[in-house]
Length: 278
Image 1 (tube, rainbow, N blue to C red):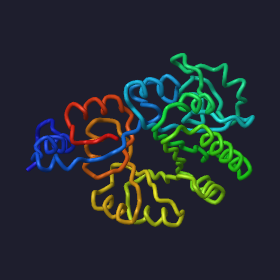
Image 2 (cartoon, helix red, strand yellow; image 1 turned 180 degrees about the vertical axis):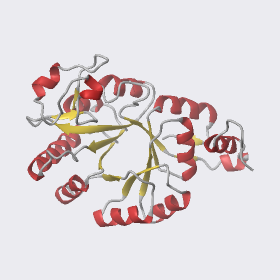
Image 3 (tube, rainbow, N blue to C red; image 1 turned 180 degrees about the horizontal axis):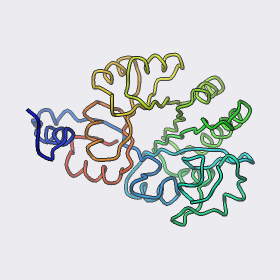
């Protein structure tokens, strides 16, 4: 029988979670919540204010994006193109850092540089940060790629606060392979625009990586369990809504990415006390 009301499948999942017997709730779920671009639906993405605000409201996990300027400076910025965020033409990779420092976003924020980002978190112990390496742009040839990877890894790890996890992630296998071969202790995560599958697990094995970030859509609990049995840490995205978070918990994810981390954090603590957000 089809559900003809406004309840979606995910809403039904929510009701199921609320209806769980107390004995089941006692088996607490553990998941790490982290803020996508600092919480891109709640704050202006990848700005210092976004990270400062989400941290100030209790978030301890973050994701950000790293690009390199024409003169070799590392910048916190998702798109290669400046247009969506600033309304200007051009790309990060083809612009000098001095020019970028003069640019403001459409909401008036300065473009955030890696050094400023690292300085903010340097005294904040126990954070989890994913540094997504945005190296798919054609300008990242092998020479530029190695320079980029070396600079990012060394600067980030030199500033990492005590008890914190700094993870380097990418859709692009090249920086993952380079970092793994150059810095054996590096913590890496491979991102896929697909649900978790045996094919994805095989790609991980070929890379020698034990962390994966897959889409919630297309991921099953069975595949998450299978991945965990093989020692793989599973992160799921995107997290646009509270229902996305609920589904991710139900699938058994270790980490959940969210564009509304502050809202999720508040809602979970008020409604699902058996979920430990770590």
